[in-house]
Image 1 (cartoon, rainbow, N blue to C red):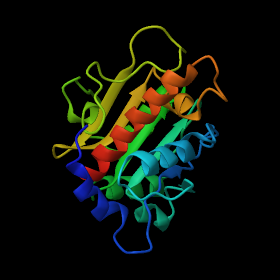
Image 2: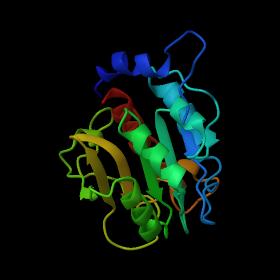
Image 3: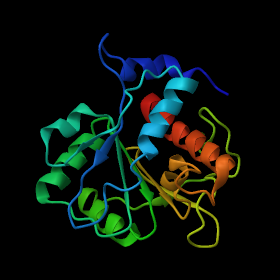
Image 4: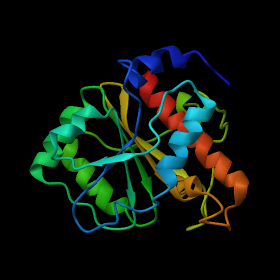
Length: 216
């Protein structure tokens, strides 16, 4: 386990004595279930509090991309099964946020892929998603995943897939597909078929994504 990023993390997680890190879930338009996996992010925040030096809030928050409050949160998250639709203001705000130090993690909950890719192309028309190799530091920044993303929830066969958008060399959007880490974060109480080991793997991989985002 590598501990050096936490010095940097604390600068983001606690810029003043009263602030705590939280994850802002994107409330997107289009009718997709942006609100799904209701316990996943709170479980992740509790895990980060217990296992890292990141001072976290107990609960996630949510924000519409058109809201100026978007810029209050460095780490953005979205997931779902269905349609995603960004307004022109959403597109402008997301681009400004992500090119100014923000980070977005999207986890495909099975069915969001074509809609998410379409809308992110509006945010970054000049960029294409590229596969994230196993050698990327996001897989070893805190916990070690030598073979890349763990396979959590079995929607489709085949290996999990990880993609990214890189703006001027910086990873600004991490997209996990065919693994459903969000289901794994909810744990065996919600998805008993996944079991405790996959729950732990999901928590650790999601922690890596947070640690990487806050230290780069």
